[in-house]
Image (cartoon, rainbow, N blue to C red):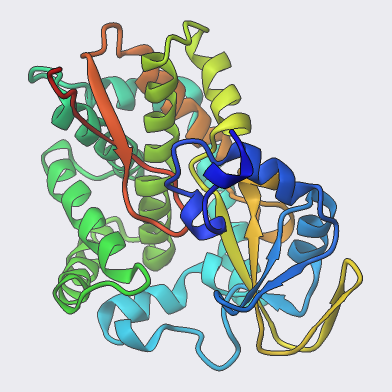
Length: 329
């Protein structure tokens, strides 16, 4: 692919048919690059990405806006409590409590919960997309102790919550996210757990990130990749990861990779270019082994795939396939 066919920028790259030659070029630049049109710094070199992720003054949220003003209300309250949206003690304490709980879920137990969520209807494009998005969140909810009868509603609510807290979500989606957050907290409160907001956070991260991993593995299968499910999932994490970008916000002026970045600036970290699919450091994804297990088991149950096409759901960060019926020529 020639540069003339490259995506316009890293945000457009997320849903581009093949952004990886462009990413490779970005990854060769060790210094951050300022994009005046996007009004942010772009970092894609592996060492520079690692430096930003480790820097104490590069925060997960802007100092002046810990919760986006647009989602003030129940959804915003949950957002503000999520460990992944906080630094320092508000991140470390719930993370330390959540990690042992995730580690306690065995691969065999996780596999059995994935199998319980298998498709029963005809496997067409719409069912394949629903499978990729629903199986991960239903598996986690089941592992958390939610009843089987609750799982479809929980999956639907998590989808509404995630859609409503996305940047530039329409007002009706934000309203739906408020209602979903309230209902989900009620579900999780019945588990008698003091970490309800972060359990909801685990469900919401699972909904998109693991769904994207399953979906991109399905895309690889549709392209003819016949490797064993576990091998293919690891290859997808390396070569076509579901989480392509993340952001950091400078609390103070910082020097990164030879560039001086003022306080209050946004840094876009192109994880897909840096080959860091789960992040790194204190905010490294706590559920990466779990995501691999769920995706591997979900893929292994898809013995025969329908002849479908796909495009990517609009997103500034996640590479999330949506399967569509192939056009008749």
